[in-house]
Image (cartoon, rainbow, N blue to C red; front, side):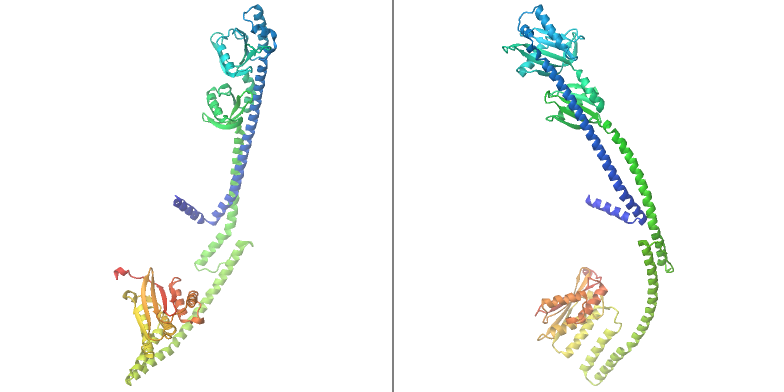
Length: 602
């Protein structure tokens, strides 16, 4: 995967690198202008989005808090109304009276009528005496109430709660007018005697559930959302808006508000995104929420985003136009210069650039003009140099007359020595003539390894005449290497160096060995001796001077001359390297680069 990505990146980079300078400048200008514009537009849109969403959340949360507070005050009033029987002596007296007469009905009716008119949303008010006789007053729209059916539920709720505190019962249906039902909330309370604290009965107020419509309607109108009220058991108390989404809203609210007093969350219902803000009352435990479609909250933001996008595109179009204009203006002189360079490439040096401005491009044109003048001067100098070289070659040919005269003279001396029966002088003269002929004739041409080794053998034959039984030469070079091409006079200076610096100071017979091997695409020749050797510091200095071409000094010029010629001819991986230890001789390693036949085929 990473390799494929790397290839794609390299191809993309090569594509960009091969574009014309004008296109590169356009891309750079557009990138530098579009990136900040796009980034600022994105930040602006995101900041506006967050700000609008936060303001909508805060406003909706404040309105949910206000609606919850209104419900709390309403419930507080109802709870205070349930305490009125504690302060009415007639009511307390008749609640404890077992039989029912006209006076009891009249007194209970008046008290219940008063309570039922305290709030317009009161559906019915009930008083249950100590002997489970039920007295009630109802709304004028209700003809009949099935109060007896509700008594067991009232006693159960009050028994579970215990004490004389009022109880708020959430949404539940009651039966009215025989078979119809009406959803109400109820406030219940146990009535005890003010003097003896004995149980006297129960008071119940049923409140029409539609009272919440007047509380949440202003909130829905302002927020353009839908409200929902949930009791502390997670049951629905009241909901506005789409009835099909009530259960989904209730489930989402139950999950989000669990253990939280207030907050907000986003949800998706029937494919639409909503923001829900909720608040839980400490008094009732009920949670009041408002659910608002995000599309309504962000309508203005979306309009602003579209306007911002259009503005951004316009700015990018302007940036592209400006980038194209400036890129063309900047690259036009360069294109003219390229055309002139092509003319120069085809040999036309009669070109000239007239810079209009003193900027970098103008300076480049001026330097181009100077370069053309310099090229013309160099061509003139080359012509003069060629003429001088021809003259020097002629003189060199003339100077070769003297070396030829010398070895022709040596040949005459050899013939004279043979005629006088002096074989040692004849052989010495013959070998010396071969040495001079090998060194002088076509000294720049390459030779074979075989010829180079024969030259070394001739040199050793001369030494044998001068120093009998002092030196020995062993050449162990395989046949396939003998036909390889090599520079002339590579081995003889190394052998001469070994003789006079390694073997001459050694007592007794000294041996020089020449071997050859293949090392990857290099041929390695090793010229080793068993002479006096060198210490580590001397070897290190010598190798450093051979590597950096520092000729002369304490090490002479022989090895440096060979090393420099090998390095210049074969490349930086080739050259000379010296290994030596005191008393154990010296090895000079020569690396050259040459194609070799496969050894398996030899």
